[in-house]
Length: 179
Image 1 (cartoon, one colour):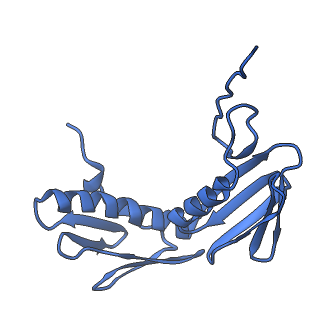
Image 2 (cartoon, rainbow, N blue to C red):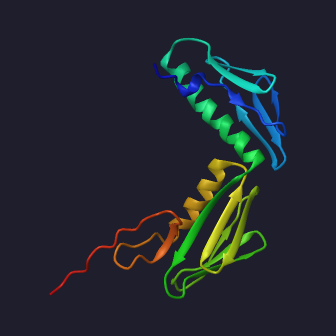
């Protein structure tokens, strides 16, 4: 008999404070705090000493799907305020490089002009070397969105593999046409 992930309670670490309000749930930890709205018509969130329990209020498909989504969002919030999230991007190409200055990321990607990307609040960008970008933050969705926006300036092309790619991304190189 398989147990659904939605029926499992979420463990609350000792450093994390959870506060339930009428409109949602606030999670506060050592790295910061996050807030998530909760659909009070379909779901119920309860705190039991060191566990968080999410239940559907009715048997509708909408309520069941909201329980799973809400559980994943709250679990990611707890992980974010305790350890944070990180995405690593690699820049591949001759002359392609990046540098951080204040709250902007300057990219030289082979265009006639440099690209300046304004880093949103709550996100930290680090450069271990000019061809490696580390994007860190407590909100998983925001970190992923920033990484996707930076990658979209020069996606890896299929013939030489030049461009910005995720560190775990595999680019399949096509063979060029022969005469």
